[in-house]
Length: 65
Image 1 (cartoon, rainbow, N blue to C red):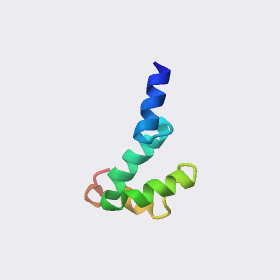
Image 2: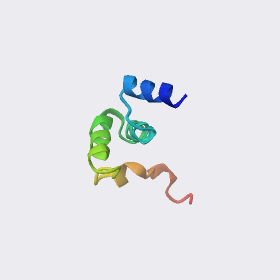
Image 3: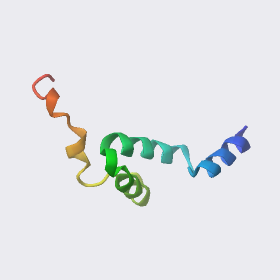
Image 4: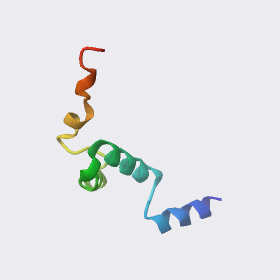
């Protein structure tokens, strides 16, 4: 089974499950700019882009927590 999952990851372009997590996070947090965030995380050992924190706060929830 490991060989099958390894082959599938190569076919679909993911070298590890961690890369898929980066892709999901980038698409969720950055919308149309997801490719920039994804490439940045791949090149910098998973570190989000410097301005990622502004995207991670929800202004609608301020005062509720």
